[in-house]
Structure formats: C-alpha cells, structure tokens
Image (cartoon, protein in one colour):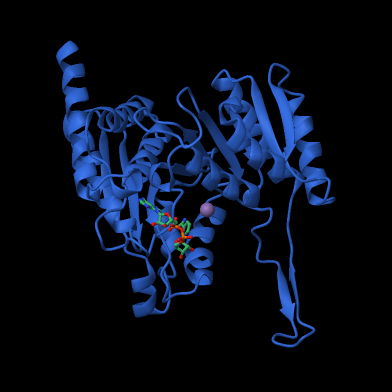
Length: 362
Ligand code: NAD
Ligand code: MN
C-alpha cells in the first residue's frame, strides 16, 4: 500500500480551526484502517507569515509542495494583507502551476439538513468549474489612476484547449456516474467572443457523448433555476467566474458555506491536487471556535477519493450524515450552539462506530 505524503496548509482565520478538526478525523481513520498509510507535513504559509517575511511562501514553496501526493488547504485572507497577496501569490500560483484546471464542487443536500428551498427529496449535483483561465486573469491594467478619465481594462482569456478540457471532464464525469445530462453556463448573447467559443467547444465535446444530453442556459437564468428547481441538475459545467458564483449559490441551496467542499484537480496526476472548502477565512467568526468544520472534513474525503480510497471517503460522508441525523450537535451556522471542536469530535465518534461495525461484520 502506498504511503501518501500530504502537505497541509491551514492558512488564516477559521482555516486552522477547521483543519485541526479534519486532522482529528484523518488520524482516527489511520488508526482504524491499517491499510491507510498517510503522513502529513504542515506549512504555516499565511498572512502572519507574510507580515513577518514579506512573502506569503518561501521562494521554493512550489518546489516543496510539488513532491506531495496532495495538498489539504484551509482558507486564506486577512484584513491586514491585500487579497492580491493571499489570492495571487498563494492560491493562484498553486492552482495554475500545478495545472489544477478543474474545480470540482459537490452540491448535495446531506441527510439531516433542511434546504431553504425544498421540503425533502434529493438535491445532488456537482459543479465543474474551469479553474485555470477565463475571467480570472491578471491581464489588463488601469490608466490615469485617480483622474476623471480613469479606465480599467480586465481581460478574459478563453482557450479552445482549456475549455475543451473542462467540458470533457464534465462529460466523462457524467458518463462514469451514469448521469443523463450536463448543464453548461453561458452568456453568449452578451459576451460575444469568449462565451461563443465556450458554447462551440462544449457543443463539440458533447457530440462525443451521445447518451448525455447537453442543456445550455444563460448564467442569469441558470442562477434562478438553481433556486427554483435545484433537483433537476446533475453536472453543471461553468467558466471560472460563473462557476465560482454558482458554487456559493449552490452551497446556500444545500445549507450554507459551512457544508461545502471543493477539490482543485489536476486530472493527469503529474502535480498534486488541492482540497479546500468553498468558504474563505471568515474573519467575522475567526477565533471564536464556532466555525463549522464539515466543509473542510468533506474536502479531506474528496482528497481520499482522489487518492483511490473512495471507500474511506464514503465512510467520512456517512459519519457526517450520522451526526446530522442522530445528534443534537449543530454549529451556529446550522442554528445550534456547538463548537467547532464538538462537531469534529462527534464526527470522529460516528466514524469510529461505523468502522468498528464494519470490522465486526468482516
Ligand atoms: P467567507 O467564505 O470567508 O465568509 C462568508 C460568510 O460565511 C461569513 O459570514 C462567514 O462567517 C460564513 N462562513 C464561512 N465559512 C464558514 C464555516 N465553515 N462555518 C460557519 N460559517 C462560515 O467569505 P468572505 O467573508 O467573502 O471572505 C473572507 C476572506 O476569505 C477574504 O479575505 C477572501 O478573499 C477570503 N477567501 C478565501 C478563499 C480561499 O481561501 N480559497 C475563498 C473565499 C474567500
Ligand atoms: Mn469563491
């Protein structure tokens, strides 16, 4: 069995708080499953590090991370440090240089959670967000700063290749998971260059998958459909910006940011993939010990799945659902008064129960 090497970057704000609970879960798993070999190295490359060293990670930071099998990331962002540093000098270089061109975000209503939108039934789809190009580019600039004539230009970069890779990932995922449809988010009526290329390429790729239906909606309408008929979606594919916005919306539809995991995937596996919650560092609740650790713990489950242990990923999600169904434990975002650590501990206990029963049956 492989011994997986995991780099852990807790980050800022609630990042370290929720990562701490995730480590409790992973340590229990290691203890209970003797076939899981996993070692962790923690790197405190965050805003505090930046304030001390003038850079958010060492010069050879990416070289160091490259050697790992996966990266478990908390969240980054601090009022004292501009987002240009936290986002553009840490998260973006990791996503871009490690070719993590897919951002994979499950939108699944967990058992025990009430959606603000439905009185039951399944909301269970995934958002596949193009993660390496599109609207999030640093191409552009500002002229005449501060003058009345000031202009800002922000370029959007779509390539045929990048769009095709995102679309193909979506269709292959749909096929593998026996889904009937892929929904594409577009805005080619108003954004007539980049989004027309997007439409064309998604259409071309869809023709390779005749059993899967392609639905294409304008992003504004699609946002409304997320609210009015969230049960209809199976796989949603979107550009970087649209996918980002849709995933926070999707997250609200199934109970909030405290419950939403994500994976930045390098599907070829030539570089490590990175697993992090959809949420940020939540400065409004940081330091209070009340953040919901489920999004982070579920992100670790996605990491195990990526590493070939879908069985253990499933056990983690089962343990989360067991707590939500059977226990009174709820963090404030879910309407309760439990702490981050109480939630983490409850999930560890549920995990223990599930795995011990399995062992007993074996
Ligand atoms: P945020 O996701 O940090 O918080 C939005 C709201 O959701 C807040 O009210 C927060 O308290 C709540 N929330 C988030 N996670 C929660 C959890 N686990 N449990 C309970 N409540 C939770 O978004 P924001 O406030 O827009 O951004 C804060 C900082 O995080 C900014 O600096 C931003 O740039 C950064 N950010 C980083 C990432 C990342 O690390 N990938 C992602 C998004 C935002
Ligand atoms: Mn976001």
